[in-house]
Image (cartoon, rainbow, N blue to C red; front, side):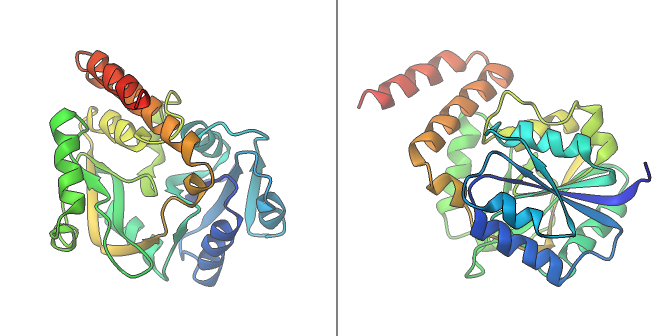
Length: 262
């Protein structure tokens, strides 16, 4: 099987309108690099499957049930052929040239394994889509920074954070495979932080570049099932702390139980 330069992997679950918008943006201004687009559907019932099936430029993988983001992403990665992998949320809109500029940023430094762009909302306001490794203090710091007035300035600087958001994450296939792909214990949330941590543990670097912007409309799939989304977030955080900060995990479990008891 011949190798392409890039595989774009989009995991979708009951987000037909967002998926259509995302695919249209890719169709309107496709990457110049030889590429393929894979949509991995997590058992959607809203017409997303038919939408993807009708597009000749898309390879559809139907899972039939909701396996979560990490497992579905891995299904797409294993089925793909690209030397580089772009994990792309269905609720993103990709401007002309953005993907090629991400690839160029990756090619500039062989020590860099992962690149993330500046994510902005529909109004052009920046999202704090990178940060330090998750931990009790860093989580508080991240939330404070995300709510502060310095997000625009902070996201205007090229830097090497501990992680970048999985909403739009470009990674070399060799690095992804070297760490065993995404950890499937995470159904949704924190899998990107864990993935970047595994890659950094091998001495590789993560790059955030403000020179590339991608629109992130955020949380459309989650909005359709808020209770399930909150539960998935709690389970992922617990799994993350049990793996990376086991001493803190019992306190987090107690905190979650108290929150649920309110």
